[in-house]
Image (cartoon, rainbow, N blue to C red):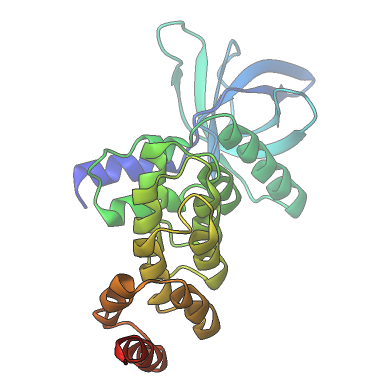
Length: 265
C-alpha cells in the first residue's frame, strides 16, 4: 500500500476529539481529556501521575454531560502530552459489553456531527477510488448520510463514490447539488430506484434531457418509470437515447415506433 494510502487510513480509524474524561485510580478521580477516540481505543491526556499498572479504569462523557460511560482499558503507550507537559497515555479498550458499545457509538456520533469527518477531510483532491472508499468506510453510515445531505462541493465529490445506497439518496437530496453533479450521480451504477426518481423529478433539473436520458437507461430503473421519463422527451432526445446500449429492448421498440409515427404523413 502506498504511503499516502496508509496515512489516510490510519488517521481515519481515530476521530479527532476533545471529550471530558476521568481517570479512575482507587478512590481518586483525575480529570483529563479524551483525544483520538475510536472504536478500539483512545488517548487520555491530563495532569495525572502515570498509572502504575497496565490495566486502568476511566470514564468518558459528552461535552453536554448527557452521556457518560465507564470503560476498562490496557495502556499501550505512555509519555508526555506535547509541549504543554502533562501525561498522555494511549489506551486499548478491553472487552466492551453491549451498553458500553452503545454509548461509545453515541459518543463517536457526537464527535463526527461536530465536524467534517476527518477521514474525508484528509483526502487529497486526486485520491484514487480505493483510497476514497477506505476513508469512507471508517465513518459510520448514519454520519455519512447526514453529511451527504448538507455536504459542500469537495465532500460531495468523495461521497458520490460511497457504496451505500442511502448515502447516495441523501446526496441526491442535497439542496446545493449542482446540475453537473446530478448528472454524474445519476450515472452511478448502484443507485436505487428511489434515488433515480429523486433525480429525475427534482424541479431543479426535471427538464434536463441529459439527466432524464441517464435515468431512463440506468440498469436499476423500473421499466414503468423509465417509460414515464421517456414520454416527456422530444425527438432529439429520443434519438440520443436510442444510441445508449443500456436502453431496455422493449422501451427501444416503443421509441422506434413513436418516431416512425411522427415521420408518417
